[in-house]
Amino acid sequence: MKAKQRAAVAGIIMALANDGRIRNVYSYELATHISLSGTAENNHVNIYDYSRSCYITGNSNNGKQYSLYDYGPSCHISLTVNGKTATGYDYGSGYHFSCSVSNRSASIYDYETGQH
Image (cartoon, rainbow, N blue to C red; front, side):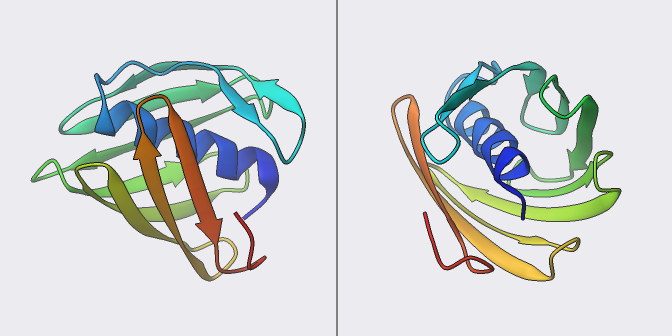
């Protein structure tokens, strides 16, 4: 998963773990803010990523397992959210990722890069 995509996914997970509101995300990896807008709610995700000029959208039948589509690299992302933690699979890279949220911070581990 590319760094900007990883930041956007972290933003979605933070919104789902908190109040559903998408906010800008600061990427320590890129040392910059990633501007996002939209909503991530119990059954639907619809965000726009200004840094990549694309949408990430998707749905959930149970509020925990999401099937997302990232229009930047044109790939699917599966996401399972359990409270303040999440796991997922990026079909574009072919690798899993995991994320933990603490208030307004998220740490996402990408198995492709082996880094947070």
